[in-house]
Length: 296
Length: 271
Image 1: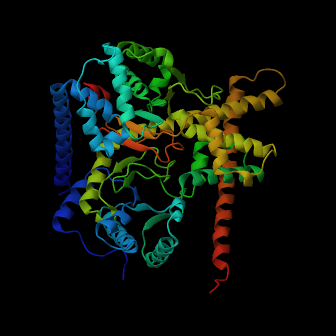
Image 2: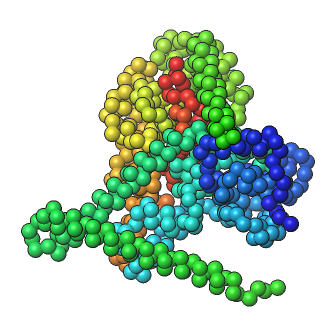
């Protein structure tokens, strides 16, 4: 039986979905599923029951996303900060997560779950990986760039979220995907997560569509800027190199241009090799983890 | 069928735009009707707690006697300043750092300057101004002039405030300062700063001054604060129709609260 609840949208929902799909749709949506505890308090339930409802709502939301042709979803389930909750609650959440996510493996969709996650740690880890690359002699410190840092994040296999939705009325990012959502559409909704409805999702997507052009423009501006900075950085490295290895005479424009192209190509090769090595390191980490005997 | 849905979608967007324009227009009209009372309410609204969860205090501020002058000094400017300060003190919590995120194509310098001066007058220590085109950064002298002009207009004592513009070099000025500070930020202060800090760390690893294993969140945090000597923003006020941070200080906005005035450009906010 599928965990992502089967079942179609009703007629009105179907029509609304089709109307929305006529416009630009986000390809990656991130959710901060906030409000389970408040919901439990409101309904006089145990906190655990609130979290259970939250998980059910996640299943329902994934179904809606499937119908809306949204191929990738990232959710913020549990931050390191949340471990400061009572042991009982933390254990309960862990058990629930284990049950639900085991069944999820049977589905074929991209769901990224951020578990015991903070963005600052993720960014720091990316810096650490790049430093490791430098230590191993795979890359130089001057190869460090915004795009390289992005490639070293845990989320490097996914595009940046187009839309970030936070429920329960809180208007903070709470250390979630701070780097990746710099040019995402942010929608803060006051509904509690277990009460999230298809219409709330449509409202958020509509917001995305209204902001789409301006955010796209801002993203392109940023990318242009990034490319320019990379070019400047490469030029500076080449100039330094020519100064050290030149014969005292200033290099002519053609030689500089050739040197620049050569340098850029070498840098890109270095970076590719480093990323391969990083991928290998991460895969080994996981396979080692899985091969360890499971203690009863 | 696809054509029909396409048309319906355009209609939907049109309806939303019409609704937004109507709401903005109504807001402006309400403001001109309420006059001074609204002015003070808006001043109170700028402060985060008043806007979000403290309706009682908001009402309290609105019900203060609508005097045009402080009964003690009789002077209009002193009266206004005293009122601002008391408005600030009436709230339980004041943000230390307020960010103004201007997501408009053509930002209004006078309105932004106005807001900066109001924030500082109420007792906010740091105010930062950001736009993703770097317009304010490029024209920081114009912004500075405008802020000074607004200070004079509003009768605020200019000597108490220092205006610092963030540059890419390290900010060796005062670490502890009692003077309210204005920072003008641009996208370079965001991801690019993080990258620069990362490069610095990697260079020291290259020079065998440290190992990659030594790198921690606090190390990166300290490095970032060396070059940008400002506390994390407690609150960001977003202006303009775009619902995005547009690259504003990604590292620093971990716990920042975002208040947006939907589709309301700064010019409408103030009229």
